[in-house]
View 1 (cartoon, rainbow, N blue to C red):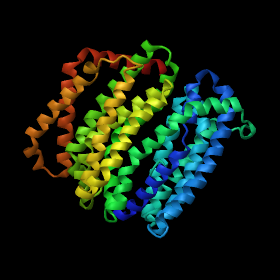
View 2 (cartoon, helix red, strand yellow):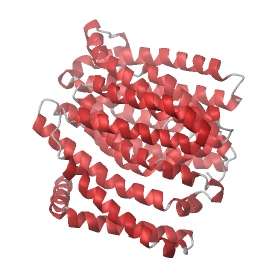
View 3 (spheres, rainbow, N blue to C red):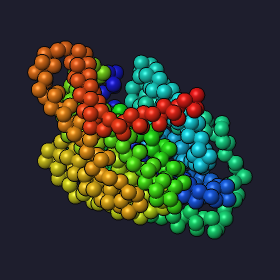
View 4 (spheres, rainbow, N blue to C red):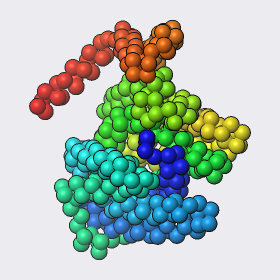
Length: 454
């Protein structure tokens, strides 16, 4: 980021927001539908590949043409070029979904996780090389993110190396199988459109309403807010969808699986978010320099959204796993409606802070509705699941506030180390006091699982 400007990120962020909103029109949740029909995967996989390919090709054509009509003469040429390149990469990413879903069905999560982590690492290296090679904004298009060309090509190559696409399936389109997949997918399609609005509409509004370059700061604040928690939850949620689908007819096992995942998500994302919010000035100064300090206030205003999103995504995985995409569409619809109503006026009045506040409000309302929907299928003692980590976090934040003056006198690196250590130690200590037995039991189960695999 030190070699790039906020306008570089502005252009790429706007093109990605537009792509993801338009691209949501093609996402009928066919991969989730395939997993939902857990015992019929081998029977449906041919139709899945053919149907998914046809929809992806049509969607790419619509996305590119609509995007060009929308932004030609209004946004820069680089936005047009980025949109086209991202759309082609997104097409390749869509084509690999059948093979990826087969691996998940066979519980080969290690291969999927290895493909993702390898592609992410190589993509980051590609971006660095391109930046220092003087490619500027193209380093963000060809590398840098999971939507970039480098990531998609590497991920697809690794997935297909393990599970090659069977091109003969392109001629295999069974009407009954199509009806079965699309019946499940129609509500997923609605939910996905609403989710795209929920995740991208604020960026779109900031890009349209506020001066050029502001979206670059706002988009990077989003990335910083979600990066550490996203790294944790991506691995967890890549597994849970299949597990929930497997136990969809066994409420006891489904509830046990959901409780463990919820506990893990809350207990890991809370301390990460605390450190991120409290130590943001020192962290930004160390990582990307003083020029990016405007990220601080935006990131802090996004903290509520940052905490809610992983839990929302887990509820979404649960509801899709048990075959209730209509319930997902329900709470996603509320979130999208709130954003459409609040984001434009709040952004025009308060700028990026207003956009962030609208995301917080939508996330809280969506989470309340999502948890109510989840309670229909799983039994969760919410007090025991959420109370101890929230209490431990309150103790840690109080300790950080009491020592804030002393920590503020330090230079950026010692300040970050001291603040992060204080928050982590006090949080861990508080959690250990509040639920010592549960933590010891969970650590024991994890250690046993690790030992057996070793």
